[in-house]
Image (tube, rainbow, N blue to C red; front, side, top):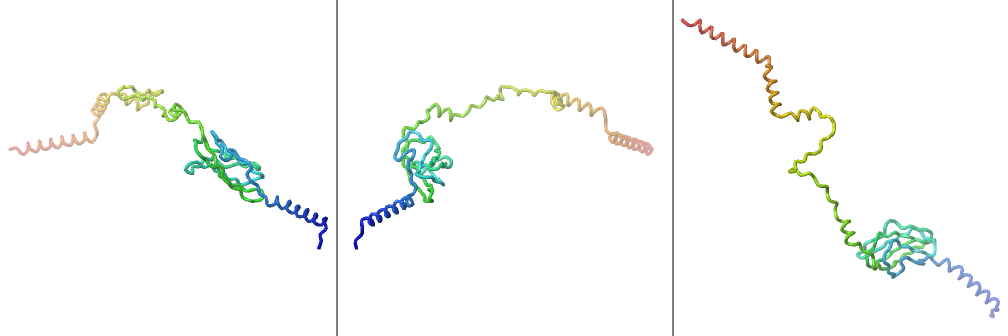
Length: 210
């Protein structure tokens, strides 16, 4: 069976059309660029920037250093096809890895790792480090041997202050004088009864005398 050239051309065009329409459906979003780039060397890093070929959602980004220490700060932010992640810096010299995972617009997960290196990072000067670590000097306190008394509080003296300012000898004399002026009534009655009993004994003794 012979095939006409027109039929063969139509079959080829149909096959190309099917392949052309199926290719976009099979393609998924991918990472277009990153900052820092793969295997790049930077002096400092404030944030990581990832750009994809299409809109993405649910981003997850970490920045790992030596010993699996993580240096990201906060959560990543997404704006269409761009994801940014703040870095808790400054980062010291060393090798690092950016690990990311996002979900593309068609629901397909995209993940990967981007190694980079930090070299020539600024280090704090000794004077700055000493001033930051040195504790503040305490204010000099008045010593007990100096005899310096604390400042008196303003205002009129209270009765307690007036009583405290009276010398001990004068206070004792006043208490003794107060006690010598008046006696309790029961003491006078007891003394009178004893005197009466003594007089009675004397009278009875005289009567018994021959």
